[in-house]
Length: 298
Length: 304
Image (tube, rainbow over all chains, first blue to last red; front, top):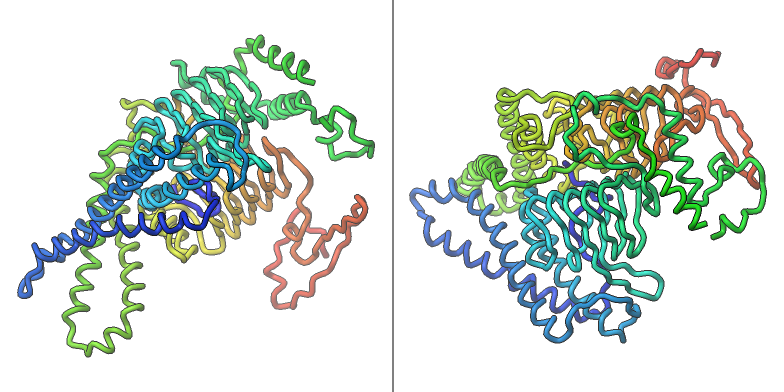
């Protein structure tokens, strides 16, 4: 609902500025997008300004400012798209593992693309109507549908594919590129239809999430992880929690049950955690001070 | 190790436990999906009318017979005033619309289908969208405390002793006690989308409840008095957090009794951690006699 700053909500682009001269292009983009809006204001002034009776001018002014903002976003998307097309002639964006160094062409162009995309995505997201976000995503090369809600989380703007009815939760991070140490990894992330991504979930590049999946809060996936369709996943890295039957037509009375057995639930989570290599000793406050076993180190 | 995980995963796959299949023991998220253009019908009038209010005052400012130098001097103040006028008229018009919409369909708790034929779901989306405008305006404005006013406008029980530190918070079916603090980046949801179902349940915070940063609070959670939820933790649907306990983890479990300054406010419990050894010490707080009545005595009240 409300948009907190600390959650870095919205489609933002990774903010690595590989070369400072990209800023020139960025400023140029801002300059050229603001020109049409000035023209619009001039045209509006010419049309409706009347010294004796300025009533029309003032009545339609708020509506007109609304239109100007929306049109500015469209113009920004348009010019960014043109620049992106020109850039892709010089170097086609591709997946892979690249060196995080200015000498690497892929790294440079990845940074340039993201620098350019920042302006339209920022503009579109600074508008409370989420529709603009979806248009921005679509034009900048994310395969998505208008039924998706991607505006509450942080979503990368290239090498992404969404099905229908995807919900990205508050503060979730869905990436297709990640910097790890000295490497930049770009891999296509595919999220199929009816996936519900919980709050604060982190989806790493290359993840393939099948249909009808649900991700619990605070779970995270690994690079290139495959999530099978029709399951509820939990934890980091995401493991199967239980079968997802919430997409079936089930009587609503069945759903209203509360979790009566809290201890059982905690045990269920603990068992999963144990399977992941976190021993009970760790969970229970480390009473015995032993050296961690080799299993733990792994 | 990997074989063990695979075995575990296979075990879960085999399990056909009907009783647990429909229990919602996980937490997802709440976000409107199926964004449709018809919301613009709501947006445009709100922006237009609020803009008209500002435009009227702006017109009055331009034609007033005050010398231009004084006009210029007061311009920044007037622009600030106009921005607040805009926000507050957005409040006003969205509240009007909300009253109108609530007359058509009363908001209620429960579990609904995320279906176009389901009235509750459709109206939940509209309510959320309308509230989004004003809350968005506030959140993008450098005055964090006026979101309390907005929440009160949307008939949520809340006062200025509570504070949402930049947290994502639903604006219906929540009640705050006094001195509630919600941490940065926390997500407080009174509505949740699970599969094809929408769950709306009231969240209650009692006095002195404290939520850590980045935690997720599921619908129906009840925070007792002096309850603390640690950072990066999650509550499950309808979870009861008892009075005076510290909870943490995913899902939240009892960590220990909360005796740090919250329970007995005239004594501060301090824990010094030195070489993995904890030393608990109590410090008396010097409080003037005329302020003693502000101290809350609870849990036996053995602080004589």
